[in-house]
Length: 417
Image 1 (cartoon, one colour):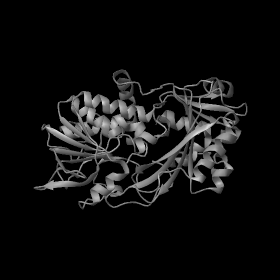
Image 2 (cartoon, helix red, strand yellow):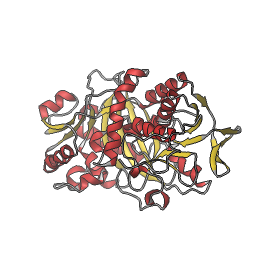
Image 3 (cartoon, one colour):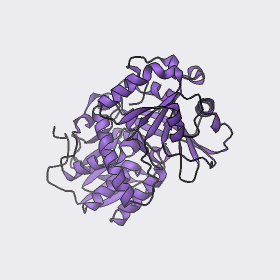
Image 4 (cartoon, one colour):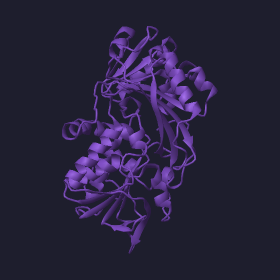
């Protein structure tokens, strides 16, 4: 295994760590460090109020490209059942994902499944009848589905709450404040300045999502991120029950590795609404919460920065309701109770940063996850190991901070990482 670059001094465990940002990754890092006896302070104005608490909550193995992305997701996937046993209920559902498809997508299906199986994922192609057994809302026109056995989903807001509660139980402190800038002393990151004062610690971990870039650049450290508005809707409860994470065929368009497969064409996966609104992508998905409500999504759009509007847009909701309403007519008359959006970060090469920062000892970063629910616990485990000076379970060289996609920037991707 390649030694992870820019970790803490080997064998030296910091007595105290400040964690900036209490989404899934920050809260889980706080829990893992607190369990090791580290004095942890978690700084966040509203835990879970960013992308973590606003996502669809999919642990999406099927969309992770082979290599470092998938390895990080696998680590996270092994940790989720442990967390489900240990924490307050966060609606962990492990019955897989179903990608339903129609006759138009048939030329792509065999090649996609062969590619995913070659990457080590457990999945099978099921006929339309079996697809409807897994998800009774699907219409007769659905020709079949891809059942990805290792996928699952969670309630992201409940997950953040459960992680924070568990970290506090282990001795972590939560400070509800805004972080203004990093504090540097004698060439080291020694803490942060908040709206209320200065907090100090031997190590600082930035897990602030899209807002990580601003904190880094304010102290002269480049950190290039793309920012993605993701939107969701929630319906009233319905009587029909299912517990797979459902995806529709427009999912295929949003991932670069899928568009490289034989048989792929935009025209066979894109709904007409998507073709007249090309500035908005769509992760066509829906799942059911424990209370019977459905979550529908997920329009995606690149925006100018972390402070772009996180309110849903007409185009995003039009695609959500139009595409899903056409593909799954059973959804058409279900009342919609609320909508929301959030801003998620992504690096130019689609890989998150989970690393120390060579130019500023004492500073660690866990950010750039456009798919934070999928890899959250794994990223937190790796980040905690780096802070503790330990060798992580997986090779993390690909996630280092000092790589061109992060420090020099890259052209905007047209697909998710």
